[in-house]
Amino acid sequence: MASRSWRRSNEDDDDYWGMTSKKSLTNPFDFDDDVTDFDDNEVSGWLTVSRQQQASELSKTMKEVAKNFEPDDSDSIDLISWDGTKTGDVEFARPPNNYASHTGNNRYGVSVTSEPSSISEAVSAAVVPKKPPTATEVSKLESQVKMLQRSLESARSDRWSVLSPEMTIKRVIAGDPYSLELYKSLSDKLALLDEAVKSHDGNAIIAVILFLKNSLKKTLFIKELNKRPDAVNQYLHYMKGHYELIEMGEFLRNIGRIEEAAMLKYKQALGFNQAEDKLRNLQNCLRGQFKDNWSLSESTEYVEDHCALLERQIAIEKNDSRDAKDAQFGVFKTTPRVAQLPSMPAITTLFYCCIYHYDKPENSISSPFSIRRDFKLSENQFLYTALTARAKLNEWRDIETLLTGKGWFGTKKMKASIGFEKVIDILNKMNAPKEILDKYLQHIDDTDQRLSIAMKLQCPKTVIDTLVQLKDRQQLLKYEKRLPPRSAEAIRIETIMRNSNMKWKN
Image (cartoon, rainbow, N blue to C red; front, side):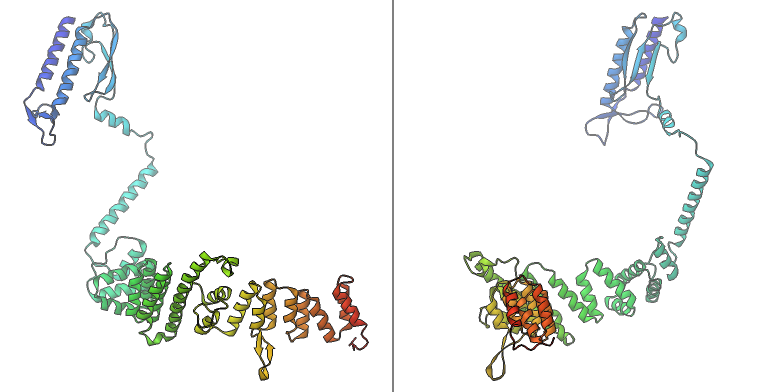
């Protein structure tokens, strides 16, 4: 009985594998393998020859195992899939005494443990949820589906219909689907723009402006947009934010805002880092934006001065960088440069030249006096800057020269356009010695102010002289107590007190 079963099994296998030995055809999508055609009532599809060989080898292996099978043996082999990977085990167990009665699905006494036997089984096992959805979740999903259906129907119905400008702008603001291309006439387009401006929504205004820009002639676009200042400002803000500066400048000129267009170009020129590039672009800006417009005459003078200053700075820097590199002594050695000169303000340039080129003749481009003249700096600007620079270098003779002017009949007189109070403040910040401070404190005409400053700066000579001038004996005695005993200033006060010719107020 058992041998008959094994023979029938072998015959069944031969019939199965014989069905696949059909005539080969060529697969048009595979240039390496031939394929076998199947009839409709058989397995449909393409099976490559290499897959046939794998199947045939597997069949032979199973046959050999079956031939060598002994009822008393217990063993197991791997179950291999069509692509050669392991998918389960085949366990051979001892067949029961009534072996013939146990044929069928387990006809050979073989127990197979593997993956699901069909795709439907695997899918069903994978998609079974852990728990069924609740009624609330089902209701929520149903409402979402209905809402999406309504939106789809609305979009289909509105696709080819022209909505009112108000409705379209509302959709733009809400972020709903919209179309502007359906507005064909000029009146409809302008109505759309007016509705956008009325909404005060920047995104809606820009969306309509860009649509008009692409659908209207340039002159008409500029003309209509210029009638709506809010739209113009929004468009300018958009171009600035997107760095469309060239187009922005052209637009400003087209709408008659010449000064703004020129200043935009001027700011662009200032954006260059290299001094030579900046100078070249400033000169181009001067010629193309300012000189041809009489309404910009005041600004033109300013840009001309800027170009002249930058050109002078470049020339001075070229010479000084070479001299500073080769300097063995002099001011470049004692006071090293800490920055390059180009692109500095005019006052900073003056300060620089007062440090490094104070003694240059006035016709030199680096002379501080030529800078004061050529750039029309005021006397106060020049004196404040020159005093600070020369005090920094402890050049007290230069400071005296700066503060000495001519009086009547050619006499010399000390004067300071900024006031000697400011002179003292500058000298003190530059750590001038007491004798220098005393020298210029006496030129403060207001005695109370002079006395206050002298006490604050601890200049005893000026304090004593001022109290004597005020004939204030009591204040002088009080001040003596603040001085170190037997100091030169204290001895001087004692000498003044013993003078019988002094006439005091108290």
